[in-house]
Length: 171
Image 1 (tube, one colour):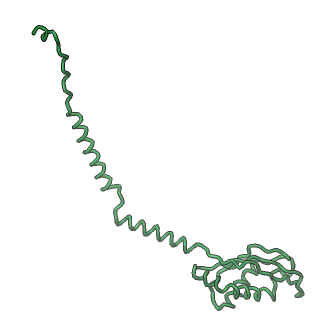
Image 2 (image 1 turned 90 degrees about the vertical axis):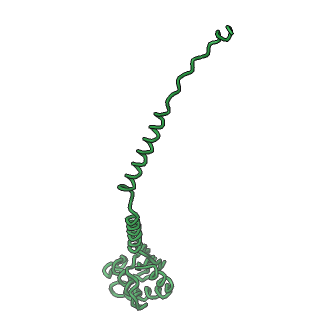
Image 3 (image 1 turned 60 degrees about the vertical axis):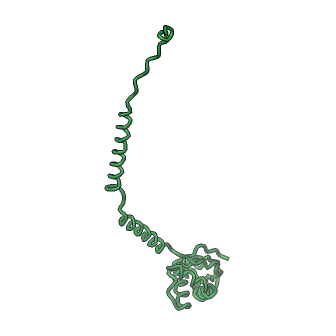
């Protein structure tokens, strides 16, 4: 037994209390729950407001789509250059775009493209596309107005809003 008394046992360390861990856990839950509650009460968008914001964004996109210009490419049109004494002095090859209002108008004009090209040829054949004083200079504004008037008159509609001449090259 004496031998048993000589063996000393190591002192057992005192158990650390779990109380601080439990307090920190409850504090975290309390603060996290309070933060989440505050977010949903004050910062989160209300369901009605979210729907309103989405409908406003969709409305803006539709408005932008409505404002987006739509064009029909007519490709190359040949037109005469006529002098002041009504003599043809040359020809111009023009690339023309017609501006329309809606997708339906664009499809409608595209479906009638041969008639549109014919109307443009009729509209510019007699008067030419140039200034009378300078027969080799294209009058873009007057020609564009003539093209719009000719197409709308020939097709008995007002679907073509404007004509844009991309390029004019003398032949």
